[in-house]
Length: 237
Image (tube, rainbow, N blue to C red):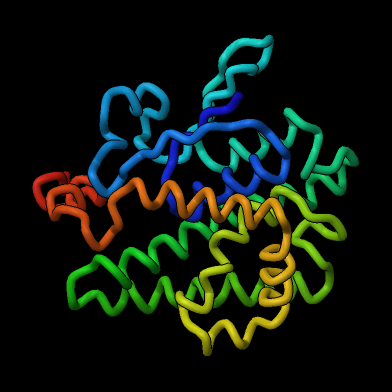
């Protein structure tokens, strides 16, 4: 049995999708990050970096419980555990890994900073908003060109690269908006295909359930946001 610690962010959605796609039994422990629960000692013992998601696999290597944090590491762990969503052929495997790393190093960080400055920054941060909006558009154009050539990011088959990237790119009609999304037809086709997967539908229903148990970002107390973002009394510089 796998225990997933998380909430409804795209990085956590990845793990919900992987668990459903791989038909792994799991339970969910909500982590209310907008109430600061990621800083509780019990959670820090699982991930000292105070980030969700985290999984604890009761049947880990050697049959012993094993904890994994960082969403990309979790996806690779689950793929290797089951022998699915990651090709055995070395070249095909690294086709997938390259695009998984693109999500981890560029899609997630650029979207994350874009959302931060769009939703949470005070007025007067136009440079930051412009920079991250530009980087979001740039990486989406790169991915759209990739998906013009192949059905899935790793090539012909659905993989952990798609599982990792989908939770971010399905948000394009909202962030950065319908006009921008309309210029990315290959991403739209790819998102629609993944939306139709039964495991993805089950995963998104599970995400909605955990969201109902955690604090929405727009209801967070100011002090909780300050601690989460390292600002105010929590700033070091």
